[in-house]
Image (cartoon, rainbow, N blue to C red; front, side):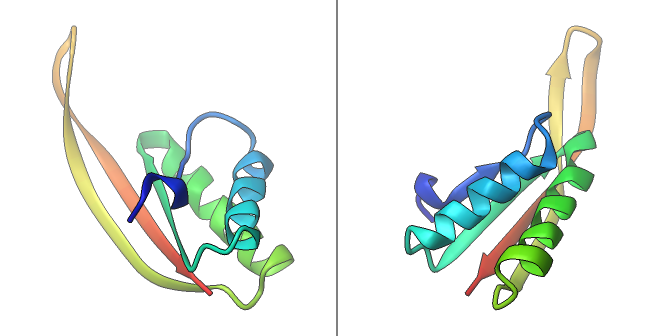
Length: 89
């Protein structure tokens, strides 16, 4: 896994991430890792589904990893859910 084929999901509109995923595949990536945590997880799932259903239907979901990260903030420690979706052509 190189940093080139990782798409980190944040607070931008879903279509921004769809464009990033489609661009990665068009540039020849065999696999793409879509990573998100917390409230961005649903946006990550949306981006993957829109990419698969509308733009690159030959894409398969190879693997889905879920987990928890411990985050230290000024209010103390809190747990944040994480997801990593691996797409492959």
